[in-house]
Image (cartoon, rainbow, N blue to C red):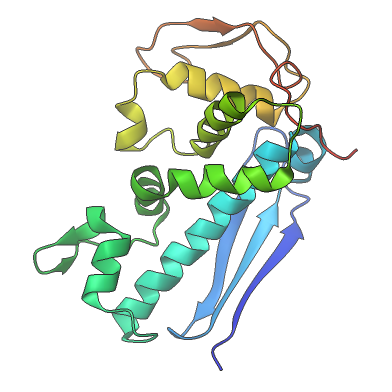
Amino acid sequence: MPSKRTTFRLDATTQVDTANVITFPDGTDGLDFFATIKLNPWVLKNSTKEYILATIVHEALHAYIDFKFQQYFQGQGGVTQQILANLFPIFWGSTGPYTNGGTPTNSHNIMATNLISVISNSLYSLNNVTMSAPMKDSIYRSLAWGGLYKTNVFMSLPNQASLIGINIAARDTAVGAGHSVGPFIIPSYPLDTFKFSSQSMGLKMPCK
């Protein structure tokens, strides 16, 4: 029987200004797949539960994308050209895949193009009863863009600063209303100041 295992561990070397989570494939032969997702303790203590879950799902998708490409290249798991092309159309040319989708940049472009709803829909499992349905839809989709700021799809969006502002507030519950996003994060983007915080958005606070 094929075996798939994802291990979650805390990474004590990470801090407030380092990566939220890092995924390390531990090995695959096309059938079996093992990966370790290292979590930033600061994020677990200071970020909203919605932000934490969106980050974990984001990293799990890195592992999934890498596994599917490895299955295809190694001729394992019944992953055919058609299956791979349907899963990741932006990385499929007339003669096959352009490149290994498991690299971080390519995985991010795949997520931005095909998997935003997968990340946002997962946040409904938190059963946040304080937020209205329209607010959930807007905030959850915004959080799904976390970590995808350098993708072509994100850079074509008209509301980049708003999406990043929501992620900033959700990542650090100490950030209050009046936080700003501008050219220091998005080159040539006008400075925007936001009048909301994770509390005013009704997001779930972390477990201290």
